[in-house]
Image 1 (cartoon, helix red, strand yellow):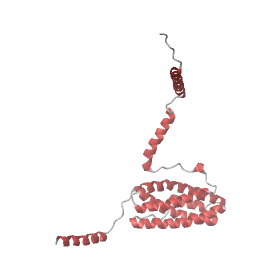
Image 2 (cartoon, one colour):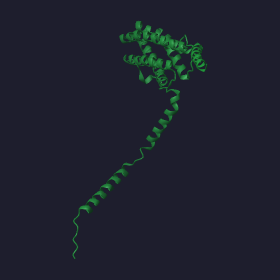
Image 3 (cartoon, one colour):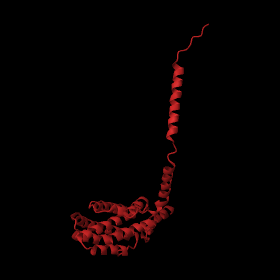
Image 4 (cartoon, one colour):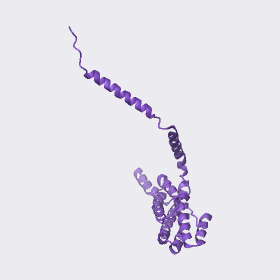
Amino acid sequence: MVMAAVAMTALVVPTAAEAAPTGPAQLSAADLTLLNGVKQAGLWEMPAGQMAATRGANPRVRQIGGMIAPQHVKLDQDVTDAANKLGVQLPTQPTAEQQGWLTEMRNASSNQQFDQIFVARLRAAHGKIFPIIGAVRAGTRNDVVRKLAQQANIVVEGHLAMLESTGLVRYGELPPIALPQQDLAASGSLLQAAQGRAEAGSGFSPTVVWVVLIAAIVIALANSYRAFKPQRVQAR
């Protein structure tokens, strides 16, 4: 009877576990930032790429626009699939700032000006989300988010290289590097330590080093002389 009860329990418990409904996954703030950031990037970069493919004055800009748009379509589907698995609601419209960038492109007075705006806005946006992707890829506990971070990293790194290949990136005008929030304390302490070492110097004086070296040579020569000098024969 005991064995029969154990067998029945083994059959019933997995069935109950499988039938239990699953709620939204537990995600960190960084995970949610990545999901929303990737989705909103696609919402404005897809139309931006489509504009570049037809309006770009530079052939390389037209080529890049034709590549960026479909790649963001694929990444947009990836993030939508991930959000559906995790029970996360994603945005459906670009932010007001992103809509302003699209308006800038539409209102460009010339195709040459369009090229500059397109490259400047997309290069800055990709540089902003790139460290977020790296931080989530390194620290997320969620397998679905980790896979999305891997996919996004490939796309964003490729887009950075493409935009820079136009020769239109003005690096001096790029926004400052934004480290992920969880890295600020560690990076701050490292920077302070490095600055302190630079201000204090290495702690060694070249003069002292030479004095010690010369003294060591003199002592070594004296010891050698005493070891090898002829011994006097004492008269009996």
